[in-house]
Image (tube, rainbow, N blue to C red):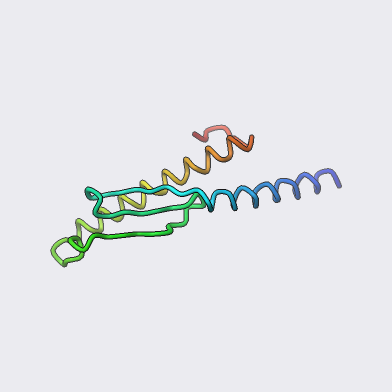
Length: 98
């Protein structure tokens, strides 16, 4: 029983260490021809979102919304790849993760 508890504590420590490392890894994405840019870290936290002033008009509302959605979705996918790669390097790869 104590061995299981030790394993759990070791896993929790590894997870915390990995979370710290992932916070330092970032991915940059662009949408709408570079007029929307996002930076996301490996923990899927958006660190920056820049929108070009040309998109900040009422007439461009739908285009801007679509560009932000595209950038956010792309950022999430890149963040997930960062996480999966980090887990593989740490020997914690899980089936089905690529």
